[in-house]
Image 1: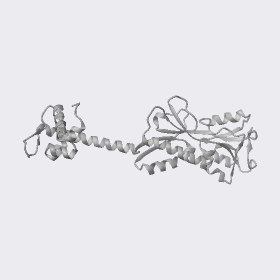
Image 2: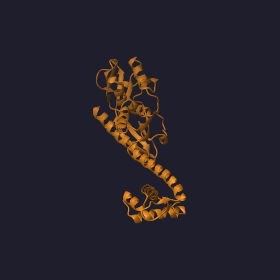
Image 3: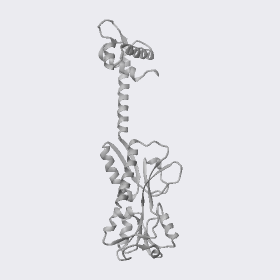
Image 4: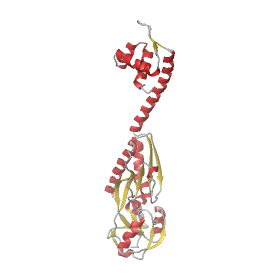
Amino acid sequence: MANVELRHLVTLTAVVDEGSFGRAASRLGYTQSTVSQHVAALERAVGGLLFDRPGGPRRVRLTPLGEVTLTHAAELLARADAMRTAIERFKAGEGRLTIGTFQSVSNTLLPVLVRRLREEFPGCDIRLSEDEPGSPDLSAVDLLFHDHRIAGTDVEHLELLRDPYHLVSPRGRFPDGHVDLAELDGAPMVAWPPDCAQPALEEALAGNGVHPEIVFRAAGNETVLSMVRTGLGSVILPWLVIHAAGAAADEALSVHALRPPIAPREIYLVRQAHRTPSPLAARAARLAAEIAGDLERGR
């Protein structure tokens, strides 16, 4: 049966429906000899005659072997049609997309991305997970938003934006305008836990001779800002976090540029290298870059 081709089964079905090789050839756009060749090839594959041929204008009829073959031919053609439909839908952007994310992206870039994907591909199945492990498992996601580069040769990075740091303080703690880093040496500060981008930030402060007093650490951006509102201390945060929280419009807070500036946080879209992305994942990556560009221009 290895020599059976779908076109042979299509021809078999057409001959049964039309009752003659000639009419089947007209329906399929073949010559009558081509139809005869397809039937002969199928008969060789199954090891017997598929049609009784009475001759003249009378219809050809299936042999008992032909009846069995036709039943399975219909099943195989239906499966092939289902596969073709599934492939067409996949190429059109349907299917599942799993995205890993983190807080500030979840509150800004990601909602726009999900909305636009669902508008373009109403049948897509988007799954999201928010976590910030130091060594993420890229095999568990199609795409991952991450706030620093991941070591390894099997990782592909697309830089989306550079996210500058600002100081957020209780209103009145510092005069309006820039704040010199030196003023933060020994100052009470609220901070993220020492993972992801936070160690690089603290190293940058130490490199400038600045060693603030960390009075509270929390992973949640709203928790951190709520402690700043109470006057517990100030916090250095990336612009994306400040923008998502509306901190610049908060009457209890003031936002300051830093002098000298700290190297910005780099936000990447990451995936496993050497793997072909689905059309949906490829489109998501392009949209993420567009949306990130809009955010940077708006900043």
